[in-house]
Amino acid sequence: MSGIEVGIRPFDPESSFFSYPTSLHIEELSASIVRSHRETTQYRPEELQALRWKVFSREEIHAYQSKSVDEMWQHCAVRLTDAVQYVVEFAKRIPGFRQLGQNDQIALLKSGSMEVVLVRMSRMFNTENNTVFFDGKFAGTELFKSLACGDLIAAVFDFAQNLCALKLTEQQMAVFTALVLLNADRPCLEDRERVQRARRDVELALSHILHRDNQESLLHKLYQRVQVLKSLCALHIEKLRWFRQLYPLTVHSLFPPLYKELFG
Ligand code: CLR
Image 1 (cartoon, rainbow, N blue to C red):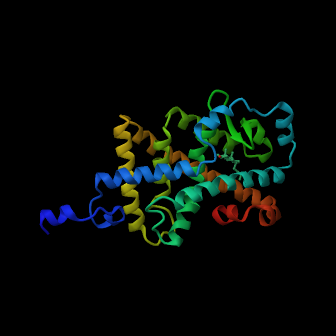
Image 2 (image 1 turned 30 degrees about the vertical axis):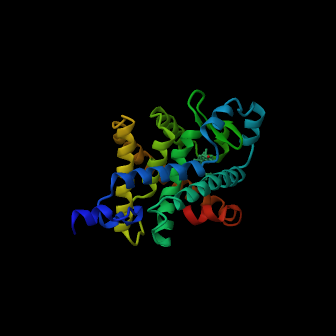
């Protein structure tokens, strides 16, 4: 093929699989992921900032603490599933994820959606008083006492605190969460190669953004956070097994179907 022929070929962002991604492609991919993120987060950063004064009162905290274990689990499972639903919507809008087969999309969401919820949780986190926006107000760890999994809650809050310290921009978080989802090492994937190719482009997008922001040192720190995410999700699954043994009927008839489909 002559140079001229190459030069006049129309630009097609979806056709990069068999060629090297152009910087224009990577630019467009970042923009698309950032847009998907913005469109699928419940609250914008300004809104969250304005809600910071809303904290649960002593009486309200007591009401949560007085719930029975199974009542509180059910309540939290519903809230968690709401958050997961937004992540599913985000995933479906990521180029590269969209193009995978349905089975692989489900496999990636099974293992990755909770990780993304926990990364997104840092947007809803107030480091000044160690609280998270939950159920309409900011809540500390003590509010979750009746779940009877204090170690998981403490570890999740600790993760949020540490991630907040990195002060990610919305764009950095958007592309990082896309990278968390597009993981070719997840179990039960049919077409790993395809996931790997999609991931490579998102990796380039993240490097590009961090380079542009002059924050290349963040890359290493973000990869370190991924290890912690894995252990938190393993702990979540372990707690769910424990809970299911105690209250099989609550899980069976009262937990959201999506929650059971992804984690059960
Ligand atoms: C994440 C960010 C969302 C709002 C939200 C709702 C539910 C919260 C979740 C956040 C973080 C994780 C969370 C969850 C409720 C229970 C769960 C605190 C803040 C912890 C880890 C317990 C897991 C076990 C349950 C399934 C009982 O925008």
